[in-house]
Image 1: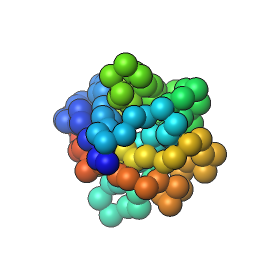
Image 2 (image 1 turned 90 degrees about the vertical axis):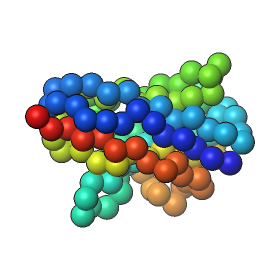
Image 3 (image 1 turned 180 degrees about the vertical axis):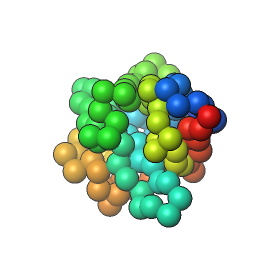
Length: 124
């Protein structure tokens, strides 16, 4: 089982990026995919999650209205569309897998597999 997060890069404030999370070794159907981020010197924090089977989504207050999580079942991939990016969004972003639907989506302990992370830098 592996998760591959990609799509990070350097973007100016106000810009957009789309991150992808592609699993291998399992299909997404009965899983929650969570997006987390970790800025230098800070703890890893939950950003968003999606329960792939029915599309239930959650967002942290800091990204609500700017980020959108979605899935493409045919491609077995989850996306995180990030708009109106701010300097404080700079971090390494990780995707992670939880089994089933979890209401405790922000807890790191809910997830059993993690991707390697992709760096997002928001700077002018």
